[in-house]
Length: 76
Image 1: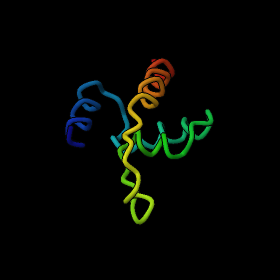
Image 2: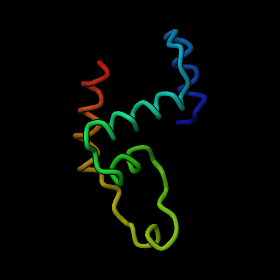
Image 3: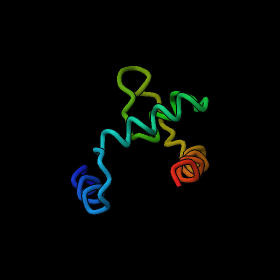
């Protein structure tokens, strides 16, 4: 999805924030609840660069699934 998809959704739902604001809120929540940094960054789709990134092959899908379920419960 593009960022414009989120912008349109937020506008249609009359939610006064930005796509970046939602991402920042999620990242702060991860920090506050003890989610490991690498998992939070992967959930946000951030790329790992350099030597570490060259050897990082996992998408952490099975670890991200319960994280996103917890996030959904938190925001609803």
